[in-house]
Length: 355
Ligand code: DAH
Image (cartoon, rainbow, N blue to C red; front, top):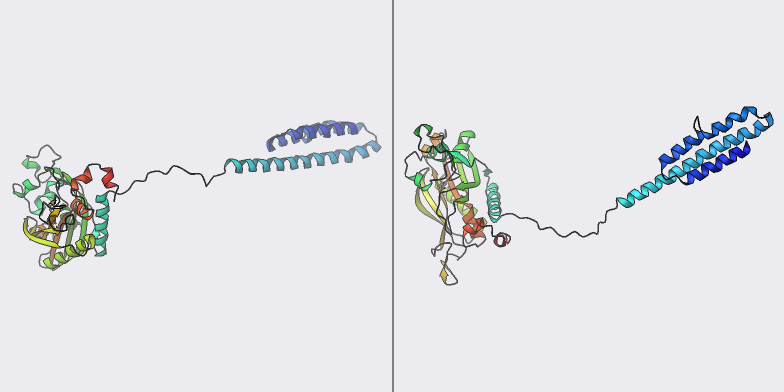
């Protein structure tokens, strides 16, 4: 029996040597020490032994059991360690590895300009508002004191969404791509409590013959202040401060009398041309940005017309307002010295990537 135990031990050690995973060791342990295992098999014969022999074989079998358990545990630990090391090896990250650098995108010059303007206006206490690009006739025209058949509609004729543009029954509900950001003046006054101090940057659309200064789709920034007794002087100070901060202290503004149905009095505001420094000439040739005049028209402005305030539920006894609408594209062209704002829409990567 002693010999059998010795053979069993060698058999176990041999097989243990060949195990490659903790799971295999567990199976092997069961094969030798389990209830129906090989050791039990041998021990079945113990009852036929003499007392003397039993005294020797008993402890020997116990010793063997302990040894098998210990060796199995040692091997399991060893295999687990090896497995962990392999895992560390496999999951290693080489932080020195160089990847080909990816070309990053960047903001469009019009977005850059819009954000600069927003920052300046926010610093002056303005809030940023938004509104729909598909607008209804009421907000785009009627509520801004541009009723049906008003000649000003021609100037802002645009892309109608509905095909029933001559249907009088649908009056006011007809939809169009907004021609300016001014409708948001009305929307905001109807929505918010007074006083109001907002800007509205956004995209607008015109049925337009394209040239250096005109495109059929462009960006405007609307401004509206409705407060107790604001004046034209407040409007002038605001625009002067903003343009000087954006384009530089030397920038000059010129106010020309004008007519807009939604403001009274109204003005068009020009800025001294940054391309030719107000001289009207670039390298001896007529500056194409300002057509040689030294001035670039940037915006329309004025005191909000009482009819518009009334339409929007404002108490005329207490409040007055000023408003303005500027072309962001033109301001971008001025700021970045680009001779035609149309270039911003022509996917000229070489141009846009410079800013
Ligand atoms: N909405 C006008 C346009 O698109 C610009 C404008 C003029 C806006 C005068 C105003 C304003 O708020 O007061 O041409």
